[in-house]
Image (cartoon, rainbow over all chains, first blue to last red; front, side):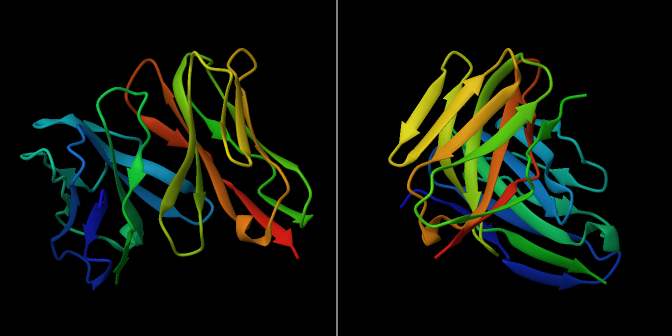
Length: 113
Length: 112
């Protein structure tokens, strides 16, 4: 089944404790992206990657890191999480070229206390 | 600055009615526009993607149109059903870069 998977689905952590949210897709997509969704602010793009070893900042990249060492994986790293990073996070992917639809993962609900 | 706006933020209509959801964007030099639905606590499901060269796309009871010159897209839902209740989001990608910007969505409630 074609899908985007994220782990963990739920995470509660404390300020400053490094964490990684994994994202994997099995559709051989070149483009992958991370978003956060907050009430009243909607979905905002954090980082995106056009292909392996190619990453770029979205609208809200501060406090986050990403890497794209393999085509199928695009982990989101929070080196020193803070409470304002409490949010619902989505990973998405699509094929090469902008005429392809984005497919979204199920989301990761992160709480930083 | 590139922005995407969806008005109204919420909409309630009786079952069976046809309805239109709106999406407007700044800067008409877009590459594509995609409509999604999101059910409470769930991820996003793609509904329709319109390329910049297209005027509309159809899937079942859904029809999305695009007017680049006026910076608008509409999502038409025919014969609405309670199962259509969800939040509908539009997302725009512009020519100048590969960023994708979402509107804040319209929360649709179909009254049985």
